[in-house]
Image 1 (cartoon, rainbow, N blue to C red):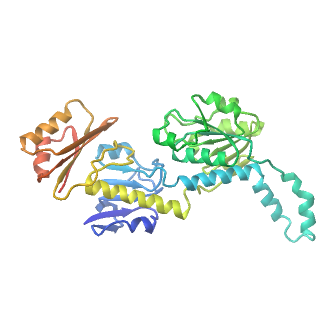
Image 2 (image 1 turned 135 degrees about the horizontal axis):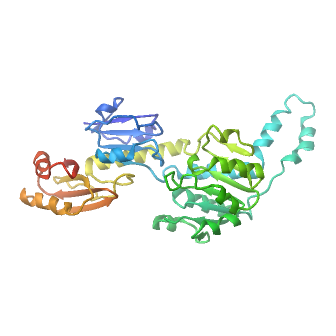
Length: 388
């Protein structure tokens, strides 16, 4: 029986996908898998029984990825599972900003108890007159699952769309409308856009990428939307751009102690993935990926190990799941050990990602996990597991 622990509230729809071979527990020290949403895990100690962590969402800033890799713990996320929910909120953010809806709502509340409210509304509504989205230009920075959906939806609203993504995948490109213009440099996007929406992960290379230099290239009065991460923004530069009118409004699903006090901002309480459907999709995807890894050794959508799959394990077959360092000659060592053990390998796949690699082998006969571990040693091999 495999044990799955949960941090945060995980959708019952996702948990219901666990088969009879699994039980849900509270104690992470006993877990073979952990399902998590936003709870910080950096200070947690992990037991040797922990095989995988499934993040029910896309961002993994709350998980110590490098330490997990060094301990042979595969970390999964669920890219695209919440994409529609975020896309819809981005569209809502554009409409909130374009039509001055938050200001209008706040003003309307002040009329409570006033005689002749209807006349007062007609007299004062002009101060909130906004603009339409149709005919405006939207720049989308990052054309992954969410960015591509935002771009396509904006076109359907009658907007012109310019996209930028130096790492555009084939899958994302195929999902993108053919009329979205993709540029190779942000200098070709910033000056042309009435709205800009950013959809890139928060990494060392993207930290504060929206800075004074970026704002200087943008159109006067641009509306900037950030439904990715607060760390992408240079707060000093943002405050000045808002004060100078370079940025007419800043709409975000992430904030900090400073930004929440800036003028001309629309701050939402991190609602991007907070829809019932998104939570169900993310939990279901995370559960499926953890079960596939535990039962078949397959790795799909891992953020710290390479994608590596042999499909479903055949009845009666055995699989050796070997997490190891990405060093020369190690594959020959693995196959040599199987030869020494007189084990015929029916199928094998080896993939690497940075300093780490993963080798998955299938045989029609049994494999002794203890024998395999003993032969491989420990210096270059991080985790050796056999699925019978």
